[in-house]
Amino acid sequence: MTKELWMNLPVKDLARSKEFYNAIGFKIGEGMGNSPVTAPLIVGTKGTMIMLFQEEAFKTVTQNGLTDTATGTEVLFSFDAETEQEVNVIAEKVAAAGGNVFAPPSLIQGWMYGCAFCDLDGHRWNALHMDMNNMPR
Image (tube, rainbow, N blue to C red):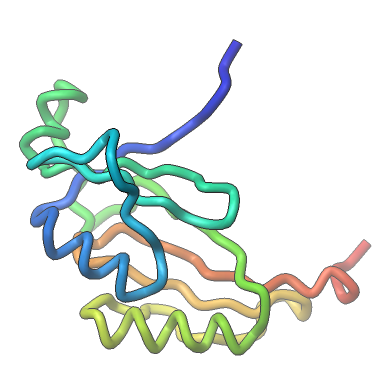
């Protein structure tokens, strides 16, 4: 039976990606998973892991080419924020760290507040604060 799930994400420059994710409030795990070509990115209080792989190492593992994130999207990672203000802060941190906030913070469907951004490699992320009291039922 499956016990855990983690994602693997190709990056062009592992050191720069680690700096970017630290700057926006994520953590780089210590110990297992760290190598010259990999690093465990820890997201959220439940410790969801996304393994960052230097692109060449990723291609070796997947035995496949990479998506051109300038022209296509392979995945959208979404994560929750505790408040609307936290969404605003995330957007500010992303911009300051060199990411692209392509959808600035705003109200979505009347009950979510969020922003969407690209990391340094063009992977798309979505930060959302969900007001469950206003969620349509």
